[in-house]
Length: 174
Image (cartoon, rainbow, N blue to C red; front, top):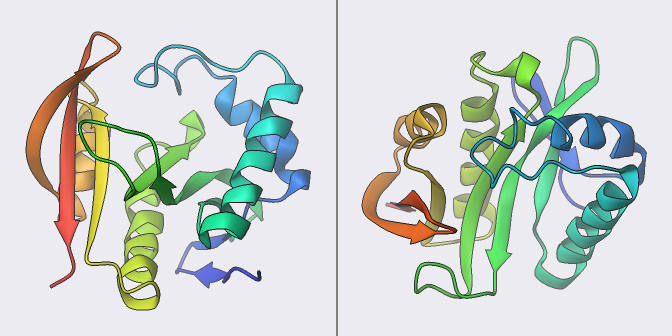
């Protein structure tokens, strides 16, 4: 399967490749990046190899997965954004599409998460013909909550996971 390459004014959004391993490791080994992700940053590159294999397997099995986000001006991998088909029970939901994003700390606050996610949502609604997409974040993660609200998601409920309160968002294709 060939996944699209999406371009915005500042970004290239493409499939995650094995050669992204070191940049992906830099992202996921940062404790500040994992502050609202269970505080469990990766410790070695082997973990990232497995994550990349898992994501690439999702491309084949589900036709979608998280995508690399690359800043155009310097061709730097700055993080990822994308849809994931969640097949495990999460907040009493199963088999739903989840929007996710994660950026290297030095790229926070620049609007990249919103810019990339906007294109991911467009792809989900226009190309995949999805009717609704969900997203979740820790309720204490004000930056992520703000991104989801800017994208047009509606907070529909809160739930507990791993002893932390999470916000559950939904956006529908209108």
